[in-house]
Length: 152
Image (cartoon, rainbow, N blue to C red; front, side, top):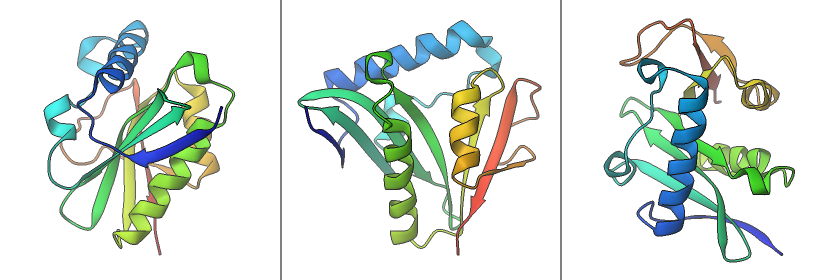
């Protein structure tokens, strides 16, 4: 099978399935007040680049780059289906998101992730993300890690 990643609309049955899996995974690790998921309507808004990874025809991963309106953006809804783990999709999604951020001339990309996701934290660190204080509408949370990558 060939893995592809492309900009696609988020409101598709296969993508909704991925988002449900993502919600269930997060709910298994964190209480509701520490889950900061955006809904499908937010993913369809202006300034959102939504990427879907496909293995053949099957959607197996997704990631959104949500512009903040101040020259920065936030990574939201980064998720890879457990059945597709090991295909290096996290890395490939990060590379596509970074390319998009550079094309949009963004100064920084930020994200929030949870402390019980060492693989995600390791991926972000490998791509040069550094820990920062809570940003935007986030409140400090002992279960959250906030990260940023400055872009030149």
